[in-house]
Length: 128
Image (cartoon, rainbow, N blue to C red; front, side, top):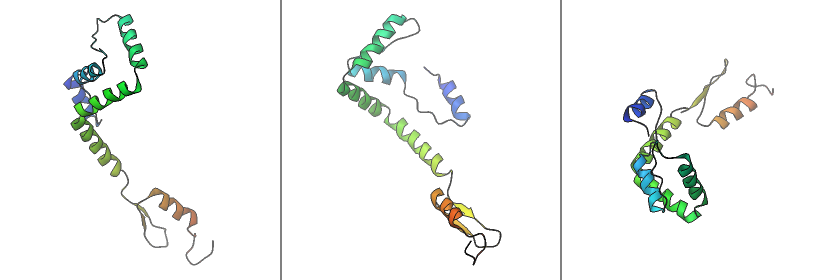
């Protein structure tokens, strides 16, 4: 488990953190019939047995756990995805290519800018 202080430190360094509280994990797996409530004193053998049970769980049981996790943490997931979307969208808003001799050329897609550079004539009015 992370402390609130450690999560805040990550955030202060510019990380976007999607954190599922321990109890939401325990509850989701319990709904799927799996007890994952462990601590530092849990013997490795007990932990390994639990891992095997999770790996052997049916697809429908895993989907049930997934749905529970999403529902229990939906507001955090939405907040994370919104922050991720904002970050990715602001990386490149437009690409401006201004040849030394010519006009301004603006693009919103990297592929279009690359195509322009590949097809652009070195001198305007020439074929090459």
